[in-house]
Amino acid sequence: MSRAYSDIAFTPTVRAVQTRMGSRSTYEPLDHTHERRNLLGVAEAAFIEARDGFYQATVSETGWPYVQFRGGPSGFLKVLDSGTIAYADFRGNVQYISVGNLQGNSRVSIILMDYANRRRLKILGRARLVHESDDPQLLARLELAHYRARVERAVVIDVDAYDWNCPQHITPRYTAAEVEEVVAPLRTEIATLTAARQTSDKQALTDDVWGSGVLPLRISSVRELTPRVRAYVLRAADGSELPPVQAGAHLDVPVVLPSGVVSTRRYSITSYSAQRQTYEIAVLREAAGHGGSAAVHARFQVGLTLRCGLPGNNFVLHADARPALLIAGGIGITPIQAMAYQLRANGRSFELHYAARSERDAAYLSDLRETVGAHLHLHGGATHPRMDVAAVLAFAASDAVIYVCGPAALIDAVRVAAAAAGIASERVRFERFLADARPRLDKPFSVSLARSGKHVEVPQGQTILDAIEAAGVTAASGCRNGSCGTCRVKVLGGEPDHRDMALSPDERALAGLMCICVSRARTPSLTLDL
Image (cartoon, rainbow, N blue to C red):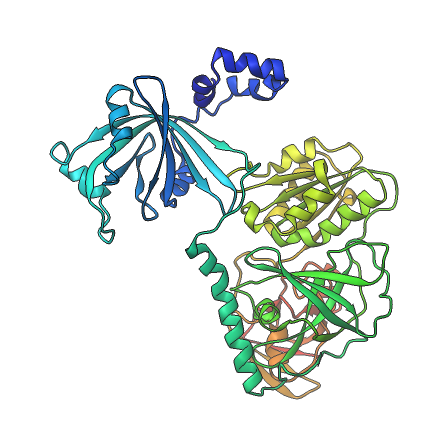
């Protein structure tokens, strides 16, 4: 089966030019594909109905093409079914060039643009004009109740083929609504900062120093990587050199939660350089989190000093000459990026596969393209295929060491695929950014703290660690996602529901330990050695 778009667009002359210019081998596989692409899918339908305009080309009886911009509120171009799109033809400058052209030649070519995300969809089809007297129900379906424009007719297009275009050379542009979407959180942040400066809480925002760690770092700059990811550059507060780090290292950073409690969060150091002047961390704002990332986005500002812990590293690159396969999902790019930079600087062999919802949501994408170049492979979104983990592993070198960081589903998929391919487990190394999200008991319970004599209620959706910190009890903590084991405590009574990835069976059963950053209780209460 061949692709419909290629059948139409790749005429014999076009194919001859492709052959002469050396690109025919790139497009020849489209003549033998299982994707015909003449029926719109869910992604195409959603893309089409989100647009507020498109470019439409028709051809006159003299052979001249005519390109016209058709605009209206988002959704005015509607998908009637998988093979048909239509729009209400609003009265314009009454030249009727497109209408006239369609009388003699029904062929149309449409390009739909998403400038903000650098995406475009091309559609080839045949158009017919439908007047209200012919089909009043169709006209009623296409009319927009709140858009004051006169509808003269409907244009119905039978789709013959479609194709997604590459983002190359598309200059990002943004509508007023898109700008407002980005600005709105900033306005909220300004309001929050203004209110915080006018009131005091357990730790006022006007304080110059947060935390009690041994490494004082000052925020020297902040930049937006995506609408939800922000990067922070940290320098030594006294201007001295920073402790040396290798790719995969992390920092335990103090954070003042909305409750006023000073907690810590662990973030990967995304930068790698022989110079020891700065560290960089990147923080994804999680609306459904426990308030740490939201507090960072709302309160971290240039000039603030953070007393952090010394850098640690539980995700170290191998030192021998074996190649590396780097796999990142979402914010999991943070340690993976540092690995790519270190491998590149050392002239070592590697490939980087990066899965993201879209290019707009891919943190550090432009930096990686510039620094890593052909080693980078992007997956996900409208213009890039989803990551086929098995295929990625199949094309890796037979002795490659695999590093994966991101959501649990991605890590589990890599581990399962590696096992199926006979790859030794010691060659698959991972770091999680999210706690185990498998459905388990999540009911409220109580915790008695033997040393402090406090009794703490742990509601649904809150961790033991967060609950006892809110009660004024200090406990050691690190990653807060159950992977490092720093927060392990002895259970003196009750039965824990273990959800960590750090403790061994013996540590759980024989030593009676649990990680209070993610694990919960199977019994109505627990007694802990705190």
